[in-house]
Amino acid sequence: MTLVTFGDAAQFQLLRRDSAQLKSDLSRLTSELSSGRTADLGRALGGDFSTLADITRSMRLNASFTSSVTDAAIAAEGRQTALARMSAEVDGFAPQLLAASGGGSLTDLQLTLANGTERFEHAVAALNTRLAGRSLFSADAPDMTPLISGEDMMAELRTLVSGAADAATIVADVEAWFMDAGGGYETLAWQGGGGQPPAVLIGEGQSAETGITALDPAIRETLTGLALAALAAETATPLPESEQRALVTAAAQQMLNGETNLIKLRAGLGAEEARIEDARVTAESTRSSLQIEYGRLVGADPYLTATELEAVSIRLESLYILTARMSRLSLTEFLR
Image 1 (cartoon, rainbow, N blue to C red):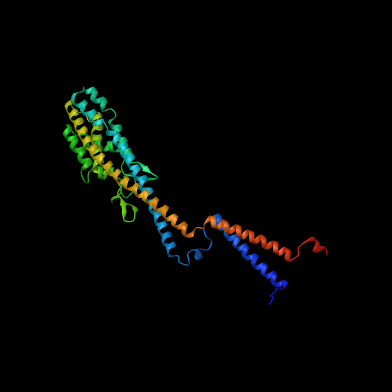
Image 2: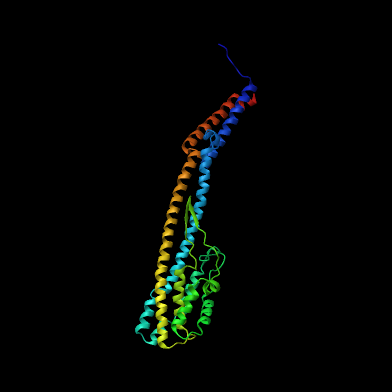
């Protein structure tokens, strides 16, 4: 039998090679255990990166959808809140006006109308709400405030009805100012964009329409009723008592119509909010699934990695012991 032996230099090189390999394995396994990711993706994936590339692309697309959905949800909630504030200004106001104009004294009527101008200005302020520096009702120009202030609008309306002699004329003029295409509301009060608000992408092939504008008929009807009530409350339009009652009745009827349509408008927005919420849940679920699959492809099994790390540590310690013995690294041998 042939006995193969190695010289000291060869043994030194073998031990040095093994030591370097074990140190490299130790460093790799330590990194994998701490990061949770495999160090050699090519080996883990068998050289096929197509699946990983598809998942990475899907994760980026999902992140984009998630961001869009979040922005859409915030904007829709902001619009819903602003419309709720506007609804609060007409909620119960019309019945009070009808009761006062139908059977109450002139003093009761004036007391009921006392905060009419304030209600109108609050409604306009709600429509001029900005969220994160962007207007909510300005169509395709979110950097612009949609309407002039309620105070400025009332100044325009006072001038408009200053020569009116009866309630019918005031009602007709104010309705035309708010509701007619090219009327004062669109040319003097409106400051938003000229295009439709863009739809919000909430998923592949899915979009949400939450871009309500201050030009919506329901909003204009509601403002018309509040403006008539505000004008009826002011001494700038002095009318006989019968005409005052007729004006208040017309304002109340206009508010009731506007309130009904405002409820429908908010209901439609609520339906879009529900779609956005469904898209958010879907996006989060998809993200979780993609993260799990991504982790399966690039992740390192912590239990297997820890076992291998322990084995490599033991082998490295054994190698050091063996090296020391072969080199006779002891104080006795040094003193001989």
